[in-house]
Amino acid sequence: MAIHSSSNQDDSSKRAMPSYFNLPPLDVSNAFPQATPASVFPPCASDYFQFDDLLTPEEQAVRKKVRECMEKEIAPVMTEYWEKAKFPFQCIPKLAALRLAGGTIKGYGCPGLSILGSAVGTAEVARVDASCSTFILVHSSLAMLTIALCGSEAQKQKYLPSLAQFQTIGCWGLTEPDYGSDASALKTTATKVEGGWILDGQKRWIGNSTFADILVIFARNTSTNQINGYIVKKDAPGLTVTKIENKIGLRIVQNGDIVMKKVFIPDEDRLTGVNSFQDTNKV
Image (cartoon, rainbow, N blue to C red; front, side, top):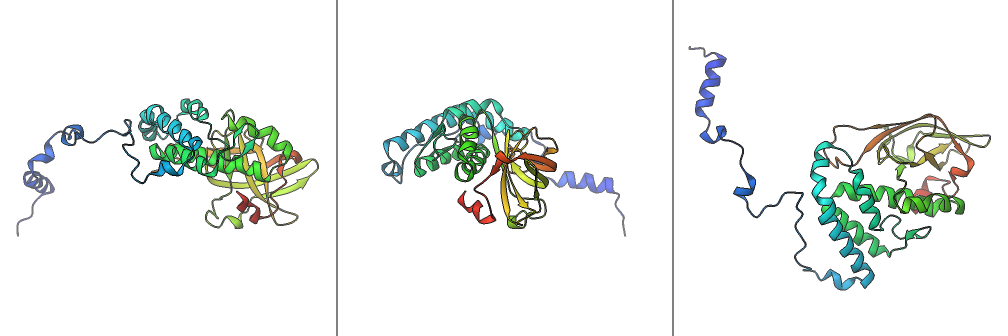
């Protein structure tokens, strides 16, 4: 029986391969002239389901404004940042100008949109880039809405106006390394001390956390065993946030691991409207 060396096998396999294996990469634009790169987002050509007829003039204006900005200003840079898995901070002023942050919240510098108007605006962002819409949803529909629904009047006055302008960025910390889908079983603790609380624990997969100025954190009250909410500043001693690397999806979103070791939170930053896990349903 003849025994072939590996080199002979490699040579024979090369000879057996079709000739196109050795050709240069295909120019997709030549092969498919109708295709467009991700940085050139195709305009919406029709309203087949006559969706516009369901919208008020104000809601139509939101849709038009967001669509134009996303197609012309945001789409051209998204591919580059997706490849780098970095966040395009230069886009934040453009997103702020859309007046979507705060959504349906009325007052405190928020837009006070209708539920449909807020949803339409967010959908137009997601139509161009899902990572960008995730950034806005975490900031607006989680962090801001928690403060609006569960915070004191003083907390709303203090935090919402700058969040509505994207002058400060928020994130929302509920899930943990061991209890991602079973959030009610969280282990992060909040212990009452004079003048405030001490937070100890970890959070994982928290969007925006690597650069957020305000972190809305949920922890278990060691006295009542119930879930409470807290507003944590990014420079709080004992707080560490580390970016989760090598993601495949939503690469522009900056997800992080949060570690809290004896982080002190003053009483005024305890969210008085969160006294059990059921209170998170308000958001």
